Amino acid sequence: MDRKPYYRDLYRKVLEEARIGYTLAIFGDHLATQQQYENHTGLDAVHYFLMQKHHWTRGQIQAMTQADILFAMSEEFELWTMPDDARQVLADMAEHHFSPSSN
Image (cartoon, rainbow, N blue to C red):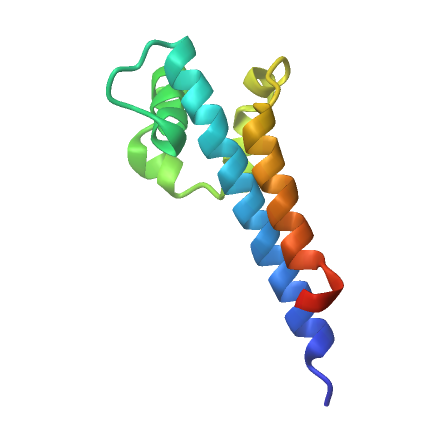
């Protein structure tokens, strides 16, 4: 039985989860600056923001998938644009992972 399609789909799913995590972390850096957080950056800043806004516990947030967190933050994302350097890294990595030589 050829399992290659299964592995390809699994690989793409994992990469998509990584892309969401990367996006949330980069947005968290922006959020930390915007909210003037002194001790929170990246995904930690996103979690802290959700705790403050919705009064969710850290445990509730940690139980969420990254896709759920992205959805919960959708209003905050509306006016945000990922910095060019961060977007270029994402594009470079996608090109590397999906180039013909990597399949």
